Length: 318
Image (cartoon, rainbow, N blue to C red; front, side, top):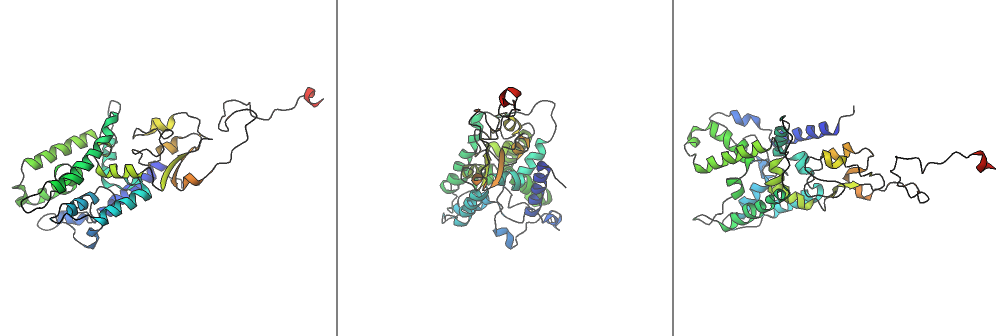
């Protein structure tokens, strides 16, 4: 059975979400929701998946990175940085489009129908996530410390909507003793969560586009990743359909390795000539071209019959 690309991608996203959060029974544990602390928790999920979610089976790379750099020794996390670099070089933002649990949540919100057209963000908005990465993930955990010399996981503490939605709310909802500790910080995070989730309805993947530090890291590695998007110039007819269907506001013809492309495949599915390819090693493939030097036409041209062989007439035969 031929499954549509969009449906196939959604099934992969659901499977990735389920594998990353397979301990669902922890939500209903006796005495309140509990965290899984088994051996798999020492490994990182390539996407944004909160360590504090009761169902989480693996850790979040951003949280793990801050935990190490913010320790009293200010160690460099070779494991987490190496993991992010390896995953990014191999897959790029394919991780965002297929494997990120919070990415799936954003897409489900974007599927909510609105009476008006979906909104597009201004160009500068996509650069905010790089400031978030630099300030909240790298600088603050090292520069701002408490009385014992430990840094604070600033991104997780002040911004991360996945942590609030999948970790904070379930734990507070099932532990009355924790509810007494709620203060202005949690109110700030709840407000930010509501704003982000609400913005994800009119703006496709709002958090992914503007605030996600993982998206910033993988976006930079999109340029060199092995999983690539390529355009066959011999087939492309510059119809613009790929740019119109891209919900990440990318023009694949102009920027096939764009830092915003999540490799969802919508552009390839919409291309009428099959000029777009996505996958491993596609840059090494070459299409056989038709010699059109006599007519000057492109082999992708199908608007006229100028380059087609003509039927000989009686005059030409004589």
